[in-house]
Image (tube, rainbow, N blue to C red; front, side, top):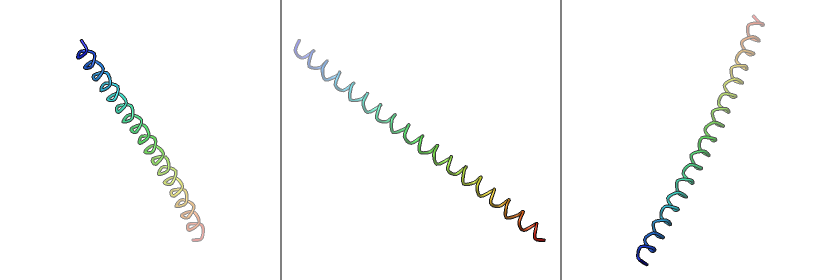
Length: 65
């Protein structure tokens, strides 16, 4: 009987440990997704600003001609 309880306790601890590892992996995944989204937004903002700057420069150059 004690052996069954001991094995049950070990199984429960192993299951809880596996759950904690899975939670940590999921939290890391969510953090990575957030970082990637922020980087994509920064790239998009930079590209829009660069395109706007190019348009303004083209307008100035065309105006001088």
